[in-house]
Amino acid sequence: MKPIEIAKDIYDVGVNDWNIRDFHGYSTYQGTSYNAFLIVDEKIALIDTVKKEFSDQLLENIAKIVDPKKIDYVISNHTEMDHSGSLPRVMHKIGEDKPLYCSKMGLKNLSRHFSQKWNYHGIANGEELSLGKRTLTFLETRMLHWPDNMFTYVKEDKILFSSDAFGQHYAGYEKFDDQIGDSIMPHAKKYFANILLLYSPLILKLLEKVTELGLEIDMICPDHGIIWRKDPGKIINAYAKWSSQAPEKKAVVVYDTMWHSTEAMAEAIAQGIVDEGVIARPIHIRSSHRSEIMTEVLDAAAVIVGSPTINNQLFPTVSDFLTYMKGLKPKNKIGAAFGSYGWSGESVKLINQELEAMKFDIIDPGVKIQYIPDQDGINACYELGKKIGKAIKG
Amino acid sequence: MDKYVCSMCGYIYDPKQGDMDNGIPPGTKFEDFPDDWKCPGCGASKEKFKKMRT
Image (cartoon, rainbow over all chains, first blue to last red; front, side):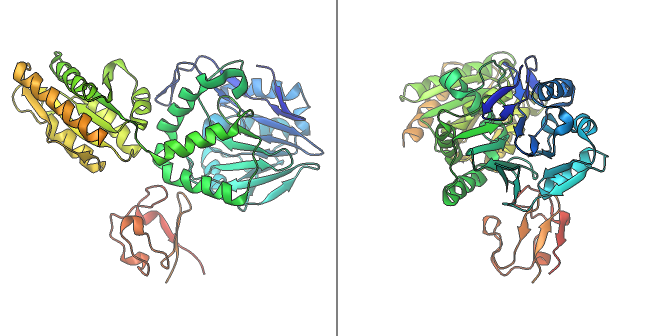
C-alpha cells in the first residue's frame, strides 16, 4: 500500500496484512492493517510502527515522503508487537540515539520486549512536544488495553492518534469511514467485543474525561483499519453504547454437541425464545469462531449455554468458550444451561457454576436430558426458551 | 498510611479512597488486605504491589 496523506503533511505510512486469518486467536477473515503515521513539520515524528515482518514496507513507505534518517522523534503509543515489532529496524535505520517517546509503563514494557538501550523518554500525562507548527500532546490511557497505552493528540489539526482504541481488523484500499460506509461497523463492534469489553468501565470514564477536557476531534486515527474523518462522533457514540452494556432484546444459545441431542435441545430453546418475540441465535461452537460468538454476546440480554457431558466433564470447546467469555467480563446478562448426557450428567451443574462466577442472573436451574430428548424433553427445552424470552421482555 | 503502586499496570492504591468496588472501605491499610485481593486495574496479585515513597 502506498502512503496516504490524511491531512496536510500527515501521512499514514502503515501496511495491510491481507492474509492474516488468525490474529492471536481472533479470527480476521478480512485481514487487518497496521497503521503508522508520519508527521512532517519542522521536526519529523513517526507515530507507532508495524508488525516486524512488514518493517521493510514501512521504511519504503516513509522513504517515499522523506529520508527515514531525517525522523527526529519516534512515538510508541502501544507496546504490543504489531505496533512495536519494527522498532529495532526503524531505530537502526534512523539512528539508535533518536528520542523514543512512550508512557512510563511503555518504557518498562518496551524494555521487556527489546534489549536495545534506546533513548527512551517516559512522558508525564498531558506532556507536550512541539514539532514546530504542530504540538503533540500525550494522554495516558492505561489498561486500554495494556498498561502502556497512550493517545497522541495534535491540537492544531484536531487529530487523535488513538492506538488500538476505535480500531477494526480490516484490510482494504479504503482508508476512511466515508469511503467504506457502515459496512465497517461490524468490524469495529467485533474489535470492541473481543479486545475492549472488559475495560468498559474505563472507557466510560475516558469518554467523560474527553468531554470534560473539551478535546475537539476532527479525525481519529486508530492503529488498525480505517480512519474516522467524516464522522468521528459515530464511533465515539458506538463505544459509549457498547461500554454501557445495555442489552438488546436478543438471546444467544451457544452449544456444542456430540450426537445432535444437545443441538436439538438448543433449537427447541431458541424456538421458545423466538415465540416470545425475542431474537434468538443458536450458535454451534465448532462451526463458529470464539471471537464471532463474543461479538454476538456483546449486545445479547441472555447467554444460554449447552454442553454434552463427556467423561464427567464439559465438552472441551464449551470450556474454551466459557473461559474466553469470563475473561471479557460481560455484564447485565441472563444465563441458563442445558445439555444431554449418558450416565453421570455433570455438564449443566458445571456451566451454572461458571455463569454464577460471571455474575449472570441464572433464572432457571437448566435442563438436562439423558441420551436423546423425547417429546417431553423437547417441550421442557421449549418452555425454558419461553421463560428466557419472557425474562428478556421484562 | 502508605500508598501502594501496582508494578504491572501502575494502578495506585490510596488508603484515603479505598477500593469500594472490591469491598475495601476508605481507611484500610494495604497490609490488611485479604491475600486473594486483585489489582482493580489489571488483576495482578497483591505481591506485585510496591510501597510508594512519600
